[in-house]
Length: 432
Image 1 (cartoon, rainbow, N blue to C red):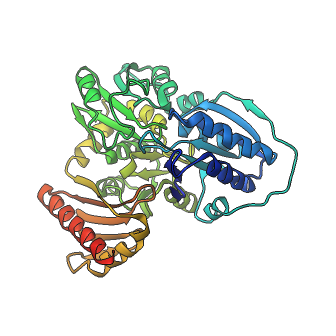
Image 2: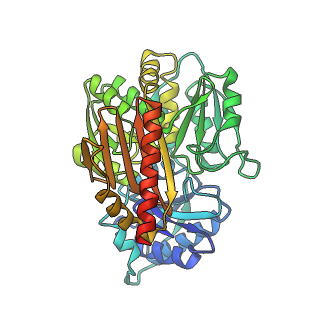
Image 3: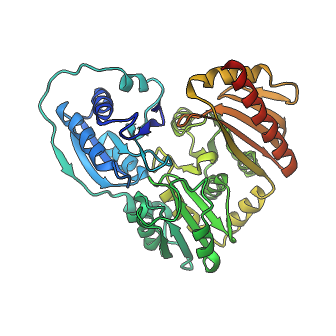
């Protein structure tokens, strides 16, 4: 089971059972000041029983629960701004047998100071039982107001991936004036995995041969991957396109995670903007956004663009509308051309989570003199030159060490990843 600010996740019935769901939801009740909580779930088979268990825990502590039913993560975040708190039953991009809980306070994900209060047993005072109510979301109307009408009725293929975005993403794009073809709307007949950043998206690539663009979502609808010109784009392109739209709207202050493409940062600065870097993780990006009053930003590795005025989370659904509104414009073509000059490789190697910290420490000791700068904000990041870097960090969600690299030279990028992966494996063998 993984217990981080990104959520609590595990294989349902194995290391995540209803007992843990009850315990963590009970503890979360201690953070809810409004005594109101919205709840929604993605399409995982275990979702309904987990949702009912979490609802029971909240209600027994006097919290009123507002049930959104099948809802993407961005929709629950959006409604949580109004109600004060929220829980999403999801394991995001993890395999189907996994499930988990994402917690929301004041419209944002929990932070490092709040996580221990969810993990430690809370003895709460007995109170009256809360009530449960089914509700509908105003997400689509508000998103439509943010994006505005899309011109020229672009043709768009949308790959739902069998996830919770099916009632929201196609409807938003249609409301905006797009012609939409939907793929993989149901989980039972889905032809791809839950994570569009790692899947080849072959069906979507084929479907976009006569379309202007293709969009692919993960199971809870916060990740968005773009297919354009017959090619699946890197996750960073999603963020880059969101950034380009933000710059066009006049926004200048951005926060990017430390593993986001240097091309996005360069594009922002060349267009008069400023950039701050956060640790990897949506909650870390949001925290720095709130501290610095940033207007936009996100996390390239998770294909996540964040627009704080609308949502304090990665929002693949809103981002699809924003990108659709740019089709055929100069800013769309400019950012794509700019980012094509850079190659990102995001790799991983299996390392038991109990050894993560020791492996990173060992790697730092052996990092060598090949880097002009070593940054320890999150794991260790080596700056090779102004266009090349490598980041070695532990995963918040899996038993792996992530190795991310970028360069404007393909061979150099391949070499950096190969050498860094070998270094991690060597350090892992030495400490076991």
